[in-house]
Amino acid sequence: MDELKAPGKPFDISKRAVWEAWEKVKANKGAPGVDGQTIAEFETDLKGNLYKVWNRMSSGSYFPPPVRAVEIPKAHGAGTRILGVPTVADRVAQTVVARELEGKVEPIFHSDSYGYRPKRSALDAVATCRRRCWERDWVIDLDIAKFFDRVPWDLVVKAVEANTELPWVVLYVQRWLRAPMQGPDGALRERDRGTPQGSAASPVLANLFLHYAFDTWLARNFPAVTFERYVDDAVVHCVSEAQARQVLAALGERMREVGLELHPDKTRIVYCKDSNRRGSAEHTAFTFLGYTFRPRGVRTKHGKMFTGFNPAISRDALNKISAQVRSWRLHRRTEISEADLAHRINPIVRGWMNYYGAFYRSALYPLLARINAYLMRWLRKKYKRLRGRKKAQEAWTMAVTRRPRFYAHWAWVPTVPAVW
Image (cartoon, rainbow, N blue to C red):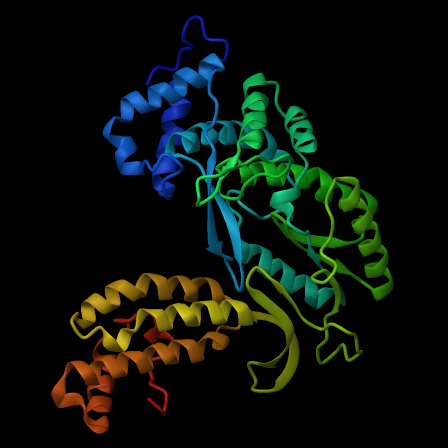
């Protein structure tokens, strides 16, 4: 596509940038916005739709439509959150701006900021957090109350202005911040703060805001402490309880300065208790990115047991995926073949294993065994000759022996619970 600036356009936005933004939006998939248009429908007139986005953005006449409010389960546990779903065209426009802004701010971001950044992941943050919990005795488990709902617009725009000389980037960020949210009943809700989760621009805006509000502030005022931050989820490591209390008090004041507040019930000071640290404290566990860090039994390579402070899948995350397994009702899907079952569940189960099994994977074993129990019930229901326990167990053992990777979780748990 043509890279040249069109004559008479006030903003120099290339068609190539719009095309690359579209490719990213298409790869990410996603639901329709308020106009109900799917990605497939947008693609039926791709050239015309992308031209409209480019033409309006280049002319300064692009105004985002409302975002569709959708209530979804939280990523790693109990509760729900409101997701703001933009239209497909608006996602393309936001991605153009987000990519431009990311190119400017990514080099300045702190090395301990992990959320939505290239070559960084939530598991990287968990791994670093685990290592630092072994090195330092105290942790501040931070929870910024309703960050995405309350982040002040003026400070977001100020941070953007400090990192770009392109007026159209600032202009469209301001317009997206002001875009109303449309509820399920069609009613529009005007906002005066916050940036909806789910938009293409929100991650970079959130990271940029917290780069100044949290990362650089903490590094400047408390250079001796370390932290991991994944967007608005953060853990701070301290050498003593006194230091933790001092840092927490200062952080509370800092959040108030930038228009936010720490959640009074979810923010806490935690003691990293293990075999070598045997003191007592009110809290000896915390949850970060779906992993609960607490004292756990660990066996050395020589077979000796000790207590380590380690992460494993959190109770909320385990309950969530357990409910999903129950909802599959595998034992009743006798109309489909074992190959169909494997095709349906393997990508999901493999994703759980890759994420929640990265640390202390034995905490996942009971769930994986429960999947086997459902599969055994499916086997006995589907084949009359295998309804007896003994014959069913023999068939199971043969299947696992011949095809040990047929189901993804058999690599870790090939057996069926004693009671099924």
